[in-house]
Length: 270
Image (cartoon, rainbow, N blue to C red; front, top):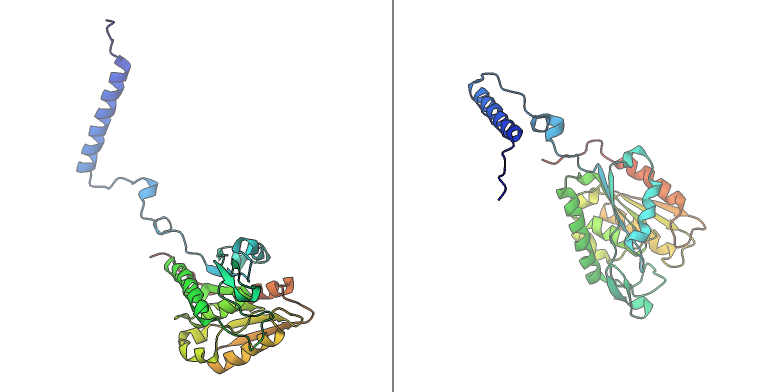
C-alpha cells in the first residue's frame, strides 16, 4: 500500500490560519476600542431599513368576459415620474354563468341580467357583495404591505367599474380614489345606509361615452346624483362620440387625476 505523504504547505497554512484566528479573538476580548464591523452589519439607517413600500397602488378591474392580463397595457399610459414606484394589479374575474348571455360561462365578477344596462336594470347584489369582499382583501393586503390608504386607487371598466364603485363605497377606510369607466350603479339606493363615514371621503371619478349602447349613458348619469345624496364627491366627465370603450383621452385624464391626489409621503415597513 502506498504511503500518503503529508502536504507540508497545507499543514503550515492551517496552522497559520488557526494562529491568526486565536490572535484576533484575544484582541477582541482585550481591546477597549470596538473594531469596525463588516459593512452589511453597520447600523446605518438607510441600510438597516427595509425597502420603501410602493408609493402608490392601482387596482384595475376589467369588464365582462375580459381578463386582467389583457388590460395590463393600460399602465403604459402612466409615464409621469410620480408613477415610477406605483404597483399595479390586474386580477381576472372568476368564471361564472351570466344571465344576459343566456347562461354562458365566462369571466364575470357578478351576474348581469340584461344588456344594454340601463339605470333600471335588475341588480345582482348578493354576487356583487361577494366580489366586493374579494376586492377588500386585495386592498387590505396592499395596506398591510405598507402602502398608505391615501395612495390606493381602484379603477374599473364597465362591470369592473360597477364593482369599483361598490368596493370603494363599502370599504371601512377612505382611499385615494375610485375611477369608474362606463360603469353603472350595481346596487339599490338602500345601500346608502351601509356606506361607512370614512368611505364617503373617497373621491370618485366617473367617465362615460355618450354613444355607449352597452351601458347606456343614462345609466352613467344616474351615478353622480346618487353619490351626491350619499354625501360622496364625484366628478363626472362625458365623452361625445365615445362608445363602450376606453379612450386615450380618458386615460390621460385619469393620470392627471391620480397625480393630483397622491400623497407626498410614502410609508415604510416598520
